[in-house]
Amino acid sequence: MAIRRIYETPDPMLRQTSRPVETFDVSLKTLVADMFETMYAAPGIGLAAVQVGEPIRLLVIDLQEPESEAKDAPIVRDPRVFINPEILTTSDNEIPYTEGCLSVPEQYAEVMRPDRIRAKWQDVDGTMHEEDIDGLLAVCLQHEMDHLNGVLFIDHLSRLRRDMVLKKLAKWRKENGLVAA
Ligand code: NI
Image (tube, rainbow, N blue to C red):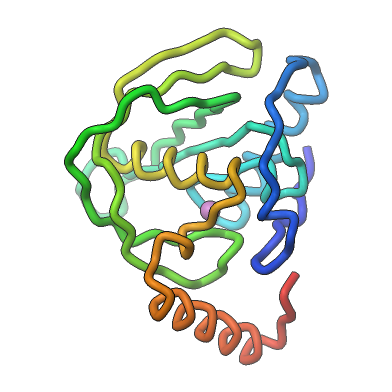
């Protein structure tokens, strides 16, 4: 396994439309393992393959939620892989969630999305799955699926809010001696 470089905005890599996964082979499993390692190290709760420079329709999610509400409750790992995901239906009801993205580091903004979706996808072996999904997993899956179409969460903001986030990002990079990766 290896930690991969995460592409950051405004790299044109992130604006590509990812292509469907057709071959479920050992190299796909290696990429999935690398993506989990990269995501946990970042740390983050979701990562699309295009964010590590592989524009294919693959994303990984692990919400890493605590086992209970008790302070210092252990984090439960729940690694999930979504390949060629499709949203079949969405609820009319939308909820706000403060999103962040490893490709827009250290920046957060509220985005409205449907709170419940029905989705289908394939796993690493190519087996098809279909499920109703809600809560944070629904938010995260929609955010990661946007990446497969070259869309970032900041694209959901008004122009004014987006410019503010990008300005803050530039300031953060400058303060930390970083350049756009
Ligand atoms: Ni993201």
